[in-house]
Image (tube, rainbow, N blue to C red; front, side, top):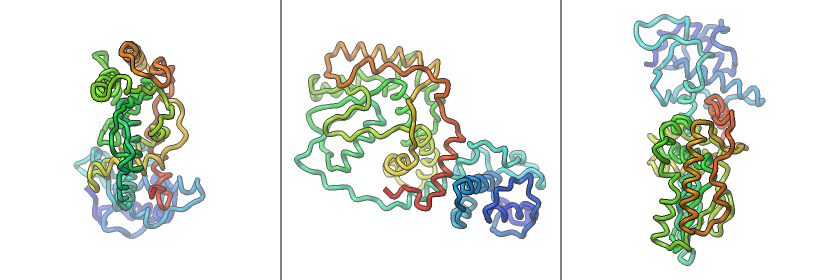
Length: 359
């Protein structure tokens, strides 16, 4: 519950005034006092988010605009799992969570604050008129890697290739990459799980999730177009008629997962996914290394890949690349990003006046 101006001390309002003026002073070091400047006193998560935005701006030699600062404080918190947290040292309340030292708050508590302004910025982008389909241009039936297929479908539609033809392409890659991309597809489609939780729920000894059942996917489309017209593509290889799959940056995709929550309140589900895939994720993407997953998922993914490789070879589909490429990359000790990485990326986007999302 947000507190009225009279329920916060002069010192609390003094810290807020410092933050609105661009200060990076943490709460524990603040001694300034001030009168109320807003109709209510913000939660500790909002205040600390503004302080960290000030830190990011100072590091980049910039300054947070008054409009953005107020947006962080007035937009509210898009995830109420923790509720509004109070500043340690303020008057105690007989209910609610305990007071906190804001500088010790984890990124997970701040991401629901910064997601709101990014969502509003996305929702304000003008809708593009779909191009009229070109009647003589036929596309292909896409299956396999759900992330690559979704991106290719969007790009095909934008280019006017909205008709499906009499050939099929099953897009895939090493199973570590495909597993993380399957998580990413869920993340931009309203999923709430992070990559580790998604792997724990989907990569199990009982069998692979649908995204990794390549033989069944190929069999389904081959029943419509024929085995010889069903091409299995392993890896980021060029395919005639299909745009290349852009780099997959798990940090950018995880940010889309956070922003997708408040964005889903502002726009319809299909537009939400389009905005995340075509605007937010490309702008948030940075150079990303190979996608790997650690044990125990690596062992299960290897077993899945070996089984699917055998089934695909036996079916006789034409293959672009090598089916050995289905085997996941070697285990990496640093397979997963941190919530702090996602928060840093969000702050970076917020500091861009246009958000770089008007694509």
